[in-house]
Amino acid sequence: MTTTTIDFITANFENNGGGDRQKWHRTHEYYASLRPAVLFRQEMWDALDNNGELADAAETVLGMTGWVGKGSSTALYIDPAVFESPRGWDDSGWQLEPTARALRLRDTHAETLPIVCVSLHLPYASCTGRAIEGEYLTRFLDKAHITGSGNTVKLPAVLGGDRNSYTTPVPGGPLLPPIETFTDRVHQTHRSRRGPDGVRIPDTHTDQEIRTAGAEDAARHVALTYGRMSALAPTVVEKPEQGPATAVDGFWLSRMLLPALVDVNVIDMTGLSDHHAVRARFHRPTLADILRRAAAPRADLRQSSTRMRSAAR
Image (cartoon, rainbow, N blue to C red; front, side, top):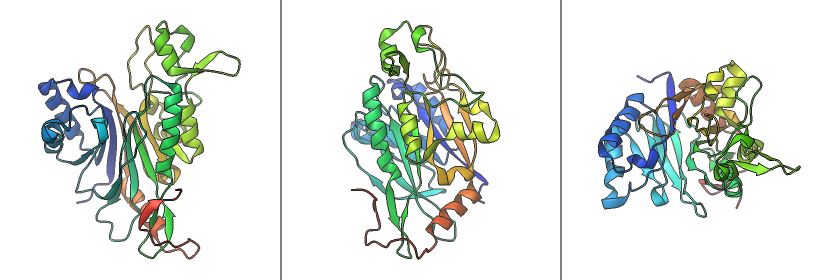
């Protein structure tokens, strides 16, 4: 039986357990209990060591199919009963390599577009580095696909992970952290940039650029559309020298997918990780309908001979 909703979860598991195998198992068993359709993981350190011992163990405990990115920085896991993955993308030039796969819904009884899903971990120590890699992320909003009828269409994307920076506030939602109160001057530098007047301001550059490129922050959308400010809950705890608890983890998704997004919530990972997980819940029939309609034949779309490619070279 097909479920009505499917969940995408992003989770930064601190140091992949840091060698504590009991903690590693507890955390992965907890992830498995949440039954995500897609799990976006960060800090996969050592997963590919010993012939991929931890990578294989994660697939077994989760009951999911997974891919670990270069450098074991990130990973992406899918429930094979919900999604199949026709291809992935290897990329270069990142401090922490993202893991990117095209995922297609199963059992839709018609052609549907794949979704480009990217597990990301942006640099923590440089606003400039995040700005560059955030702009690199827009390449995943620029993938194109050739449908069965020969039409070229732009693929929707879901970008999930640890952004190490802030999102644009919404009316009635949490304020940006007061950077001037950070007594940890190094952290202040990591999380802020100089404004035109020379005063340091919280870094929201990447969020603004991703949104300019045609995606939206999932939690922001849920807060504005449904009034659920709980979607904007912090994903890292307060540290007196580094400011209040705030949200630095989450999802950006192509706006065409927003009608299927029904909720976002933060999952408490206290005792397991230094980051809380974020869950984006989608109404499966609506998502399937969006992807089916987008793949339908349209005479006005240009044809190409490449099945799946980047729209910009």
